[in-house]
View 1: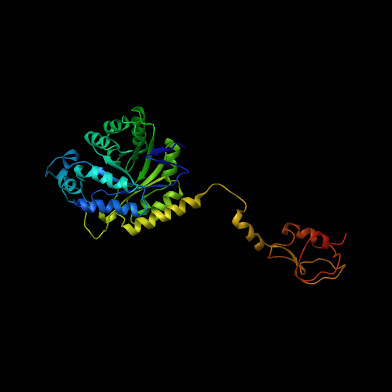
View 2: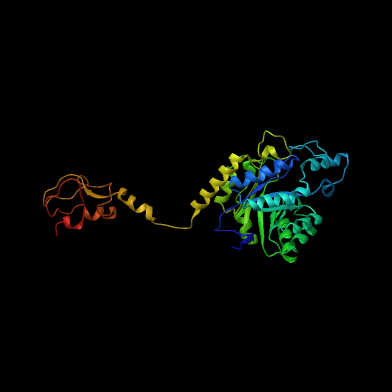
Length: 350
């Protein structure tokens, strides 16, 4: 299975899971809050912090027509799209400074570009990877633009049919992308665990030959850990300092204690996966004594028959293997044997 290289990190199967803290609009247009989010992400053990690079004007137009209001079923129901993106965008003037803060803390820094100008801007910032949002997976010219940079690409797949994912991947590869990772995503905010279908992760990996991860909008930390168990190499989670602070994405974002808990649980999960292995490990050898084996459980005299009353399979494991019970029963004792003696062939009369 191919890997991708993000900065100094090799990302893919067999490597530590790459954890991305997504800031999105949780800074609420306060630069100091944005810095604190980056600092908290580093303190919680994330590998990268991610922004979104757009303006309201690159996303939509200022219009009050009904088509430009968010419909029912989301956190943003009834809001005007232009106003929403004005509130949620991250000022481009901040992003170089936030990159410097992140890199200084040992984090990778990158962003989701939503238009060609944003790709150029992020190239100028020397981001190590480009990200395609779920909603932009159908923007094939944008995908081509990112692919032509030669940088690795992470493509979120929320709402996409298998055919749409295939078209996006083919487009990226045809335009020069050699390192692509896909993220399973459910584009609901928040998403319900029963709608996650995490078994899609190994299917995507087998189908496209790429590392696959999870862009997660569920509440809590259980689903990302489950994703790691089925092969996720990347986990992306929205991150806020506090859900009590209103913001475009704060309601489904993790707080610092939760992100730290998630990272810790992921590290345990990835260690526990190991490889295919049977038999005992080095730390299990001492436990073999607790297996059952054949023991003399009642004293017998020389010449007595071994019967089900005086020979049993019990713990500990110092006697003969239980597979020999049928061979022992009906044989004669070669000498007097005390109760509690581990059974062995030398105790049987020849």
